[in-house]
Length: 115
Length: 115
Figure 1 (tube, chains in turn cyan, orange):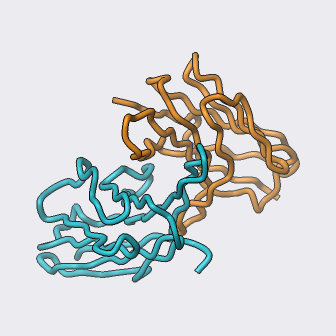
Figure 2 (cartoon, rainbow over the protein chains, first blue to last red):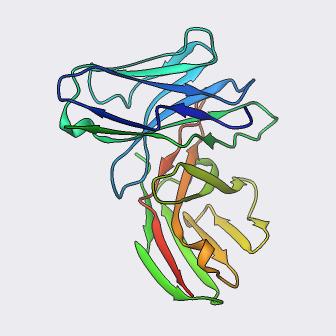
């Protein structure tokens, strides 16, 4: 596709349930980022991949959060034993190497509601 | 740690008015600055990207300026229209030795243009 695609768009999970959020970046983009956006706030960085390598996971809030990008394309963010404070919009972004242009392109996001 | 502040948090203007949104950041060692638009329940749409070596970028009715030394950027919207109503987010990318360019976001300015 032409843009970053995320699925599902909406997810309601019962507290304690595991969830998996998917991101399809723009084809050929090397860098992939996950962000978490709480209501009324700007997105906050979770983790970064360069191809299949997870180079930075300093923003993951707890060890219940896990991300992977095994083939350097599609990425999955997994949240185990969801809690109410995990309710947020999860945004994926990708960027490529085009000289010094590192413009980030974002997907529509997955709105997670934990009940 | 980089902090990004956007003022005002909300702004309401009549259609046709020119307006300025402000963004300030605490660490001037940035690689680039990006302005995004976010419609309710949607992802982020990139509006303008300014590299650290640039002072401004223009796209249609939008003009963004960057003053790295003072840690400030402004987004100027000319002849505002009701369709411009959205939340506008400012984000800065750090200078880093690696390839990670995770963005630090402000909390956004919610703009309403009244018909």
